Image 1 (spheres, rainbow, N blue to C red):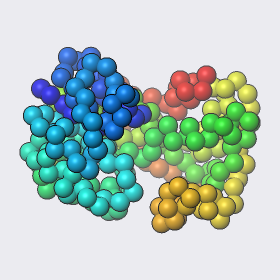
Image 2 (image 1 turned 135 degrees about the vertical axis):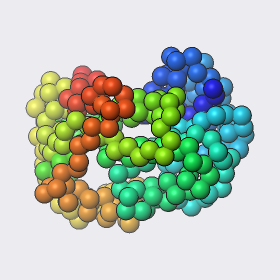
Image 3 (image 1 turned 120 degrees about the vertical axis):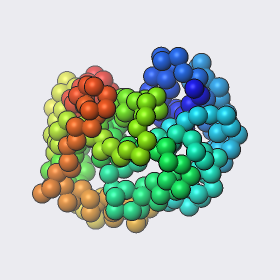
Image 4 (image 1 turned 45 degrees about the vertical axis):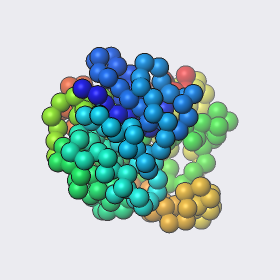
Length: 260
């Protein structure tokens, strides 16, 4: 078996690579910077928008689509026709958007698909690292309750889907509980060994900051989602435990690993 890993230098992809290698599976990676590629793998330098060379001869692919639009996805997935595709998606794919469009494109080229719909990655809170070390995290919607998932749990789900038969399965991949963002900041403080408090940021200010690097449309959508989570927390799924055989790793464990 030969598996192509896209996003191999990222938060989840690097764990997928190490897990596959640990199982003795032949791994190929598609990377933009060859110097950053992991060891022990066949490296193809290129971009996911044109993966034909990387797709040649592989049996399965771990797919990341790192863009805020699905433009070009149909051509990008054509080289993966009839191959096993494990796509790192998002819970909001059920409402359409870029994740839903990518899922639809994948379904058009193969019946051997598995979708890992993540509520959110705990690694996103690394954006607070500088503020947390200063003792205050200033961001919007501190009482928004999120079931963020450890990147190693995502990788474990992907490894199972790549090595076993999980065709036409959609999994909701979450952490073991929904925690308020202010509580996440407090737990990061525990990992740092110092108090970290939450300071509520005005929504309009947050929108301006987010728009600068996410774009206005995506920023508005993100803020709307966080606002909804104050009264309706993100769901908690048992799919990690069902598929991997172990419970999802809690946020405080993730915080200790990344901030201690």
